[in-house]
Amino acid sequence: MIVRELELDLDAFEGPLDLLLTLVLKEELEPAEVDVAEIVIAFALGLAATERLDLDACGEFLVLVSALLELKARGLFADEAAELAELGADEAAEELARRLEEYRRVKEAAALLAERLEAERDRYFRLGPAPLQPRPDRRTAPQDPALLARALRSLAAEPPQVSLAHMELRFPPVTQFLERFRAVLRRRSRFDFEGELRGLSRAEQAVAFLALLDLRKAGEIELEQARAFAPILVARAVGAAAPGAKGKAWSARSA
Image (cartoon, rainbow, N blue to C red):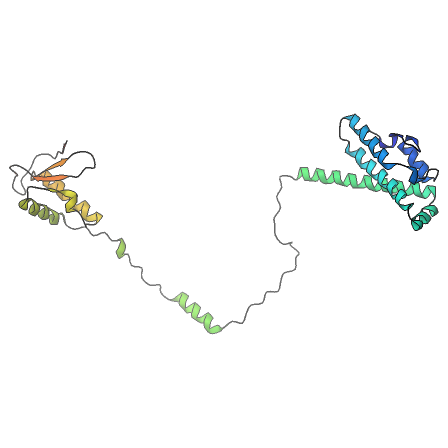
């Protein structure tokens, strides 16, 4: 769409926009007689007829209409009218051409910036102060040499020995639980294994279970467990062999 060739049908003028501007600049047509709203409507209808958004045409139209509005606004004031009267037709034409040229330079600069942005879209820049930014003068507070010497002496001191006693595992002897279980079976014929482990540590419970397996291997006890993870019942074996005698292989009965 060529803006200068836009056909206008106004009350005071009929023809292209380029001719209208020429008549106004040559003072053959008063700016007050030009209905700018009708010009905007005509441009909007012409732009809609093209069925596309022509940004170049829109920019050029804004420059021309703003110049026309400025001329019309100056005519409303006496001082501006006098200044406008002193401006010749050639000078007015040169002023309009200068504005169009300035608009063209801005439009080309905008296109160049858009190309740079598209080309450098995947680049990332370091965020921080400028390299040539003046560095602030950081002054340290008054220092006490005695405090510095004390801090250095503390760094040179031997660190205290770290105790690992809490990580040490102490395992009681298996014979301790062998005698314990035998003593329990001498008092009663059966007992609950978990009941005898209450209050013991995990290491002691593991050793007690090993002692239980030794007694079963020697044939001194029998074990019963109704299901998996159920309480283990320990009973004195019928005809148990003497301590230290070789017993039968270990087996567990399940209900």
